[in-house]
Image (cartoon, rainbow, N blue to C red; front, side):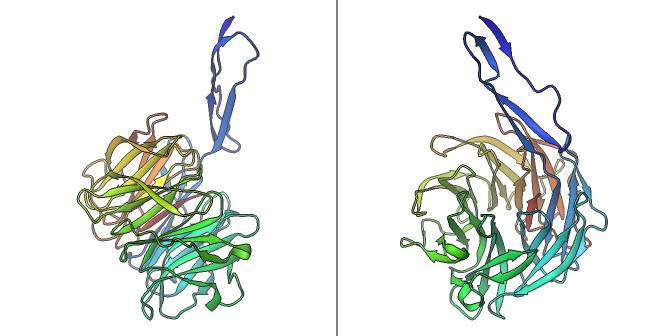
Length: 394
């Protein structure tokens, strides 16, 4: 008959985690079940700077209690990839993959444990066509793989391509043993590629052809286009994010003013169905869903803001939680290079890549509401030129 209240007394520090309590209060009229969930706080932030001089990749460590960033020793690092555009992390945490937006190269960077220091180009892979320009990367971490999917534009074709690779100690190899048979036709300019949370499907947003191409992942990592592919509801699909709980894919479209983020559902076949469109800021580009599946954020390239939403656990619908400026002083818009954003594994911090400014903005995410609160001033991430196009967090 007594009231009870369970809270986290001390957060774990080895490893650093954030723990939360569910069903922690009530009246004890019978046996009580309380759920405690602990998530690792992010360790490192990596960003690709395609218009830096020279092209570079930057690395930062995350201060776990505030989310603030400290540049890793030697960061930013010049790259053999002249315009490093897209990034993806190896599931084992030892390698960072870098797509070159100017050539067919995909580089592998080594990640030093504990420090995040990068060793550029410990391995390099040339894609299936000498005329490919690789933009986007996504990793399928499934035990049968892992596999890397690269979205490229090929000037010799009327369509872009996706290429599939196996990953072994950071080295890429075509899933079928030959580059030509690991290449799959996509639409033009697949700027964003994502693997769904069940590791069954791959989606690519093709901004210049108004298509979202859809694939199933087969044995060995090969791709098969879905029967209903491609999805053509949007004019300029730019970036996409999949819900960690499955069933939903969210895609930005900047063809109207204001721009939109669009909710799709999918079933066991993987086929996308447009459910609803939500207004965001001007020229939306990046989109991310936090690891808990509770919040969604969109970076608005044209007005230097981030739009935030809560996600309904029942139907994936979005409810706005407001707009935050990507700079604490000016809300500096990124109008020439893509902006991107990512949430750390503990769902505490949001990091936003500010393309024109050459900086990263840091926000804390308010629990329950998803409202963003800026952490200090934006952090520089370039050597001497233009700013970041993509961002990933380990």
